[in-house]
Amino acid sequence: MNEFLHTLLQAVIVAAVPVITGGIIKGISALVKYFSVKTDNDTAKKYLAAAEEAARRAVTYVSQTYVDALKKSDKFTKENQEEALNRAVEKATNLLTHEAVLFLEGAYGDLTEFLKTYIEAEVRGQKQQNSTMKPGEPFTAELKEAAAATAAATAAAVAQAAISKEVPDGYRDAIRRGAEIPHPC
Image (cartoon, rainbow, N blue to C red; front, side, top):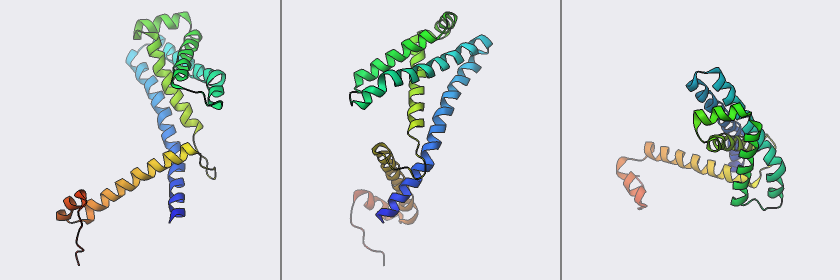
């Protein structure tokens, strides 16, 4: 039974992780498309695409030059996360042209807050991409936790559906209270 649950859990993870990753990536693209359609302007589209690319490059740069070393030494604290975000915002701002900065500030206000949205989405997307599991690959602790949570939620949903379909109405309340139910036979 334990082996069956392990195999089922692995199958759920193998199927779910790529779908979730794809959804996050499509979400980032949808955000860019939303801003692009909203502006109805080729110049705005150009600067939005530049901001997205700057955020992508900044996240990769900060991850390679700052975050990876801290994670390896188990020193990646909340303060270091904030520092990484600040470095990414600074790097993304430096990657944008002066014209792009002026346009984005004029159209969307605070450039730092605007870039943080792109950067956070990119960080999330890169984390999801890096945590996808290939068939036959061993479980990591993070994947085991995610798998356990997914399996628990799935089991709860299945149990709830089974209770609603198979239990007579008079017994539902007793089940919720944890009362003992006499066998119907």
